[in-house]
Image 1 (tube, rainbow, N blue to C red):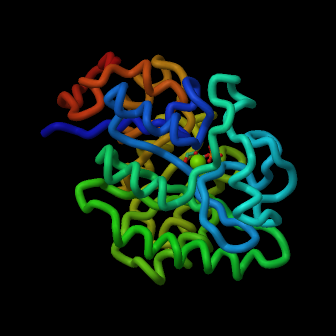
Image 2 (image 1 turned 120 degrees about the vertical axis):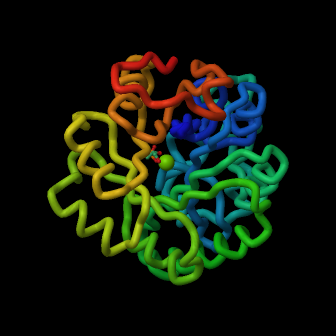
Image 3 (image 1 turned 180 degrees about the vertical axis):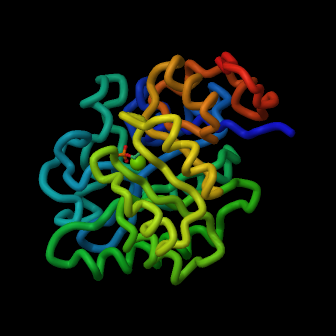
Amino acid sequence: MASPRNILAHRGMSTLAPENTMPAFELLTKYGVRWLETDLGITKDEHVVVLHDDYLDRTTSGSGPLTDIMFNDLRQLDAGSWFDSEFTGVKVPTLDELIDFINRSKVNINIELKAVIGPNANRLADSLVKQFAAALDRLNPDSRVIISSFNPLMLLKMQQLKPALEYAVLFEDHTFYDDWTLIMQATGAQIIHPQSEHLTRGTVQQMKDYGYEVNVWTVDTIDRANELFNWGVDGIFTDIAQSFPPHHQKGAPRYGKFLTTWF
Ligand code: G3P
Ligand code: MG
């Protein structure tokens, strides 16, 4: 039986174009990449947009928290020139633009719900998941969707609206404690997304023994990808999805008993 081993483009093709922008998404098609990972946040006036950081400073020409800016002001910002002048004028994408891209490209998607910050965090988080749930209703059913978060409360909020979706909990190396099974069981998540650093074969085996799908982040060398796949992980998030040949991204050969070079 073929075992899936998925290559997820982390924030889009994020070493070829500015992360989490439409140019970074459009490049998936060029390289035959089947999975996109991206992040959602929300503005002060409750527009859901694609942004990794809580703050605008690193990846846009703006500054301060995303939850402090109005949408019309956000859309005036430049989210491309920090990466390369070739991308000057690229905007922070909206949730609708993201959904349109998925429907057009038919890629599979892992959408990460970023925890919302600031004095109105809980209200804004409710608004984010409500709008996200509505947007998913117009998604082409051919794309597989995984909803993930580091924050179990974001997952629980989303599950109240969309209980039948696939959910994943993200763990950082330094937040991965022995209570990880409690968090997985309490959220009802079927998928676990551990950080690659210090992840061992034994821990992967434990996760698999519990029956979880395991997708590891962020894996930016071919050697580590090979090692993880030989340990039985199902997918990796990578900033260099262009380095994994397209014919390796769609199906998978049999898992062998011995070390296999996957790429
Ligand atoms: O979802 C995998 C990875 O994106 C989690 O970390 O900080 O890049 O969103 P981060
Ligand atoms: Mg992410």
